[in-house]
Amino acid sequence: MKNSAYLHRFIIFTTCCTFLLVVAGGMVTSTDSGLSVPDWPTTYGHFMFAFPLDQMVGGIFYEHSHRMIASWVGFLTVIMAIWLWKKEERRWVRNLGFAALGTVIAQGILGGLTVLFLLPPSVSVSHATLAQTFFSIMVALSLITSTWWRSPQANSGPNEKTFSLPTIALATSILVYLQLIIGAVMRHTHSGLAVPDFPLAYGQVFPSLTPESLDSYNQLLLRMNLRLAADDPITAPQIVIHMIHRLIALVVSGGIIWTSTRLLAYRRKSRRLFFIGIALLVLLATQITLGALTVLTAKNVLIATAHVANGAALLACCIMAFLHSVKLSGIRVHHNPRVALTMKEAAA
Image: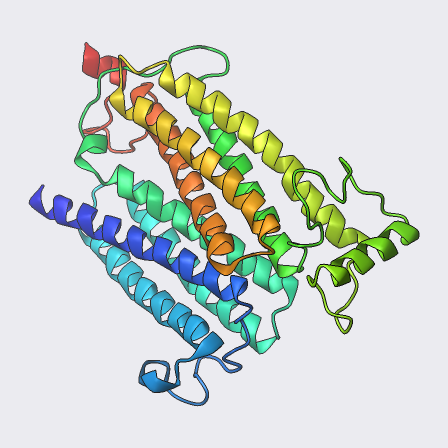
């Protein structure tokens, strides 16, 4: 049991480092530093860990720091997977650890390909998507290796036959995950400022996409100094991508509010569900604010990065809501019959 506690703490530490990696990746995209280091896996011909610190300036600092943190997270993940394989009695948890390891390896390869192929949107978006996938796995492992998860819990969760809380929380988690992917598409297709105003879009609910309108939009962006005459003009697909991100945000907000409302209803039965519900609402309000400010400040580096980081935190909170509701609803989640007690059995 003592060894399990150490493993659990190590996984939490690795998850925190993974979140830091997400922030570092956000800084790379926000500062357009993706090609500040043009070679991989070396850094300007140097072995990655031997690159001179005095040369880490400008965009090189953000890109090389991102690589260093990624290498550290990869190293921690290898240790975690081996530790789980040696000490974890639940096969599905061991498999999840190996899934995390495979994901972080693939993530590193995709990161290299984004540089070698000069940041193609398809590879860059895949890289960002896999980052959120890996972070989600680490968040799940942080909970399912805890003492709380292992111990029998009284059935304090919902047991409705329709629209149960686990179903709602899972659906919301998927929506947030998809929204983060759309956000990645928007960043890597340079569509973030395709619409420069908020909450309207060029003064309209949905902007016109006629050639004449596009020409006037581009002239406006030039006058606002958001684009240079040498830049490629904003296109209709970029505006559509930007608007899809906004519209899906409305759907996601509805899902989060619905989930939070259901979580808050269990404030007398489960303090965990109650506090997760509060956290979801706070993170949602923060995300909406940061999204608006990202546009209104013309993608201020710190605000845009905070928007990415808060989105990851929102996804983590949704996953926590789903897993807690599963555990407290009496759904079987163990394959080991010696530990596989449902919440109703535990209560009896």
